[in-house]
Amino acid sequence: MAGEALIVIDVQNDFCPGGALAVTDGDQVVPVINRLIQRFEHVVLTQDWHPAGHSSFASSHPGATPFETVDMPYGAQTLWPDHCVQGTKGATFHAGLEWTRAELVIRKGFRQAIDSYSAFFENDHETPTGLAGYLRERGISRLTLAGLATDFCVAYSAIDARRQGFEASVVLEGCRGIDLDGSMAAMTAKMREAGVALV
Ligand code: VGL
Ligand code: ZN
Image 1 (spheres, rainbow, N blue to C red):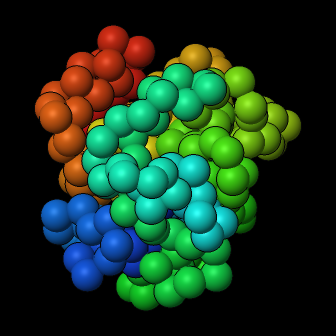
Image 2 (image 1 turned 45 degrees about the vertical axis):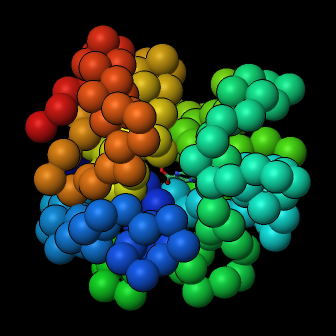
């Protein structure tokens, strides 16, 4: 339908079983998202795309272990195992994802010193990726989101979409979460508060 787009978040090998930051059953979103892709006229993909040695990797912080939180100049940051390194197989889209019709791939997390969960803003909440402008300029105002992970990149993207004035629905069947320290419940509540429709 005119004015609508599907935003497919980070369906990459490293977030699927066997990957460096595997989300439980992450690959099960693929058939669901493939069906959604067929129904949408406009499809945008995001791709987590970190340089080696990225500041969100625990390995870049001496003595740190994955999943702990550190203070960065822009605020609290969870540290992750090395994942989605630019040009690696882990950063590639899942082989079953039917992405051919995607009109745009937004890469994020490529600045060494800052992470980016959201498709719209980096984790300082002020450096834009350009996606909002791209969608507005094309007359797209209603977004449907799905992908990985529910409680990080999907939730941050959906909440930022609302802040940027887009309608946003998240198709939960097409998402799987990491659930770190109750983050699934917390981020689900935040999405609802922000006016994201969970379907
Ligand atoms: C993600 C953690 C680190 C995600 C990306 O796609 O949800 N999570 N980088
Ligand atoms: Zn990442």
